[in-house]
Image 1 (cartoon, chains in turn cyan, green):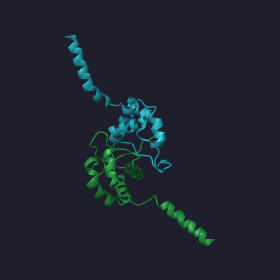
Image 2 (cartoon, chains in turn orange, cyan):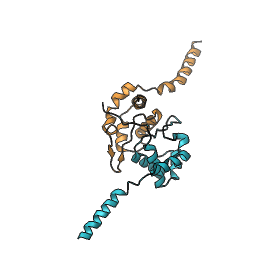
Image 3 (tube, chains in turn purple, brown):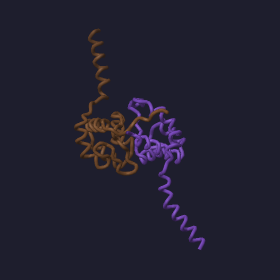
Image 4 (cartoon, helix red, strand yellow):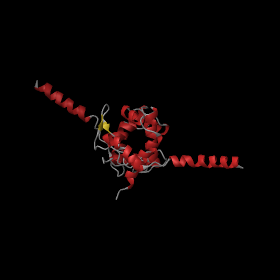
Length: 109
Length: 111
């Protein structure tokens, strides 16, 4: 009986876990994202070689931030500075940062 | 001597104006409604699937950079690569002009 309860609990947990993993803590993300503002928080800040404006991130979608940071961390997406930054981030950090960026699109008006 | 300085001034002007290929937002809107809108929305504010980016209000030159990176394979994404293959430089400039002029993304502020 106990065995089934444990198995059931594992099953329920495994179903719920992916949903839980989506939830980043925007407040913690705000603190971690301080580093990001060094480039992404300065209006008209330019990447060089090649030259282009660093992307605007306030209000960006949750999943896109998560997948971009993970792609930089794995090296699948290349950019020296972003790869270096993403290498220091845990999955939790990434989700928290994403939650913070999303929240910036919500508090308008 | 005058000719040389005039020529070099002209060349310099030309060099600076080359990367600023003007995009036409109206043509961009038309193209976006045919190609991009089903996933990104007409104005670039739709996020159809979880990991799709919002485009509205993104910097114009960043959108150009990103689309060209998809087109030349620097950035890999099965869906975006195939769309970008079909875009000319002018198409890309026009799309970027359109999406960058819509209300959406904001700068991060330093707190």
